[in-house]
Image (tube, rainbow, N blue to C red):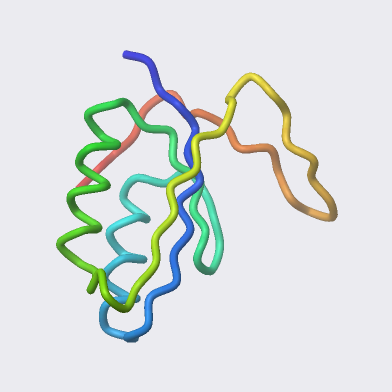
Length: 93
């Protein structure tokens, strides 16, 4: 099962929808802050995340970007930032 690193960034205009999207993404992410989450996803999980977000947002008012990252390359970090890591397992519940 191959996983790819994605960055999911969002700008949600309504606080209730914002909290729902944040809570939903935390179940799939290995890290992140504010409105950007690092997610190592299989193709099937990416489909679930996309479908789940579509149900939670109002497409005429909200923005979500899913960026594919090259997991082989290292990111540039500053301060106390840590490199994203693909954990041994995920608990989604």
